[in-house]
Length: 373
Image (cartoon, rainbow, N blue to C red; front, side, top):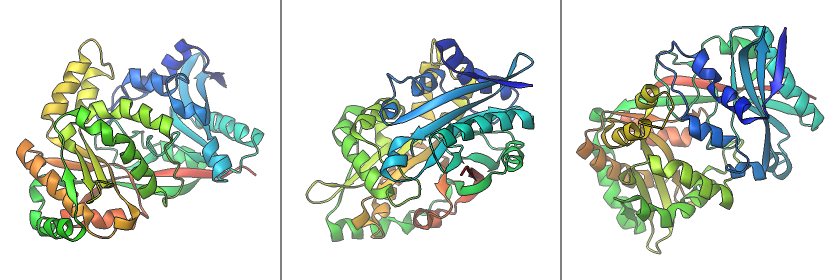
């Protein structure tokens, strides 16, 4: 028999966060979360998302042993402001036992019905800057610190619970040595002259901060048309700056401004920390932070985390200016492989930006949905 326990204490939360360490202890491809960050994600006094959202976490037990977990999430901005009566769930992990996964999903559906919501979708986080999707292809490739990894058996559990595919995501990679700068270098100069644009480059994190809020505003504007997008508010901006900026080399942040110094484009690339986080087992202390700093400086793989162009500048070639700046930095640093974070399969515009780089789709992931009315 499967029993559920609601997470209420710090000890419970640690158990919730550390369960995947047990589930994936023999996996070469699972990348653990940074434990201290994961704990803060669910700390209502630390994470401002709880001003507009709520989450209930559950642990599943069978014969006294932990066998699964799930986070039941309601984003009230989405529900009330966008009239998307959606019950979210994420951080969904379980052994290969249908009674375990079904019990956890039943609890999420029960909460959704109590709040008169119409459907359940997951795995997703609180917002568009959280992890998304269950892996359906690419199980033999290492994960990243900004994606979930899962065993292949997960998909059959969604199907057995009568969940249907809601959205599809792709992840791509390409070898930097195969990038032909001719595809963007000439366009770079043309676009800068035509629209009187300038690229901003940084060497220190403190130089980035005056533009950070404007970057999040541009993020909201450039991604607003995508399905299930929930804008980042002012309080969350401060939280994400603190959470992410320290992991990014300042030279990997590129801003494009117009003649009035208004931000019209940005991109954030992160060094790949996957193998380092595996080595430190998700622990920053006592020695993990030093290894993170080393990887930040010397990693030969990078992850394109975010790229955004102001709507009135989209389809005008601004990405050529961004790529030209990265080409110079990546050449200097000897970058070998470039990875892209999950992108919606139907986001054709972003796929067109990358077409000249010969990207290889190496992972696919899905979110699943079930109507509960």
